[in-house]
Length: 254
Image (cartoon, rainbow, N blue to C red; front, side, top):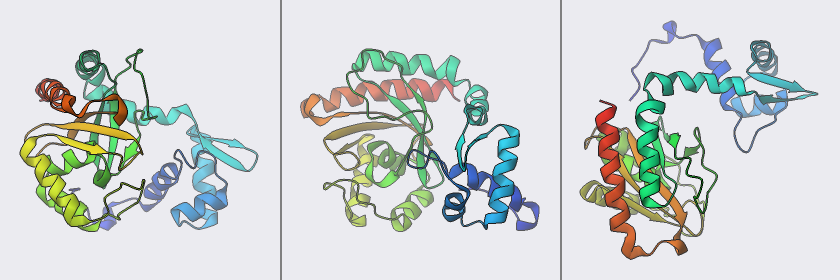
């Protein structure tokens, strides 16, 4: 959980600027000032000043009356990745894991009420991709990588997420019962693996394992592939490979 900081010590203008940046995503890649205002609930005049400041700093591009992010925003995340030596320590393990599995893999972390990809294999012979990239955000309740984080992360965070997150329907198979989700999370806590079929993306199966100790894991390693391509009898073998590399990633990040 985030540390509580007195409101008097927080820059509200900076908070609003970050809200503007977060308004841009895969479904809102180009926005007008009015659209940004609706998405952020910030008044139009303030939105204009914030956006023009971001344009001046090079994080946002103006094209007519529409705005979009520039590649400079990637610098904001690269400090985290370099500081934790993801490129030198983690990426080689992810690549080896993907080669042994024969499938692309991704490493994700919990971030507030979401799960965000922080590393991904670059396996060229990967047969399928579901469009996940570094920075992609996933809902914890309906994905394997999210549920295994719920199972192995801080119990207070887990309880809060299961009780308060909105139940979103992504496919016809999405589970919308909190008690059923809690039962799946409990099972993942016992087994150390989560398998989710077709709840977030129709026809896909996700297999994920935690990175870190029970009750304190903040990362998870997983794969997502068409369910038709993986025999359920092979789930245990794939999970064992993921667990082996998850242990190595946890060791290098200590």
